[in-house]
Image 1 (cartoon, helix red, strand yellow):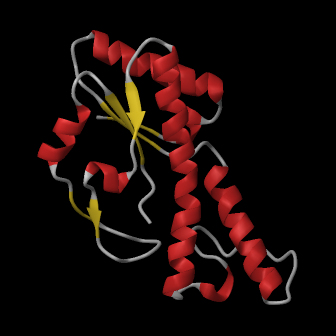
Image 2: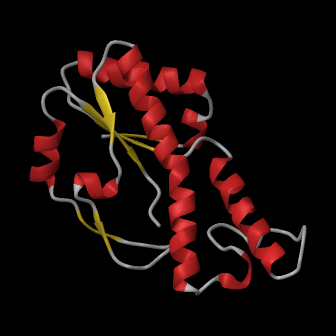
Length: 156
């Protein structure tokens, strides 16, 4: 497994570099699952949009962000936190898809998958979920033959 954070996938040039590292691992005879974060700054941008929307809904415009994974005074509102998870996870999905495309463009085989597609199980705590299980048998079957996964890393 290889994990790349936001600065490693910050732009297309860096994504291409990650693709080359993944392909080098494969050429060395190893199978690999790749986990990526959102591109640098993307999570903050998305949270900022949620904060702006929440503040406008409360009659406030402009105010400062209340911090990661919290949009305005709606913290603790399960419906709101669910939507915030949905929003923020899109950043990781973009990175995973772009990396899979870069690997394909470089001659490799890769697909991007989200958590439920690989059997990842979490608890029901929005904005702070804990991983409960990962059925490796299902995942290994999905991964064959010689196809790399590019999985988003956001845990909502």
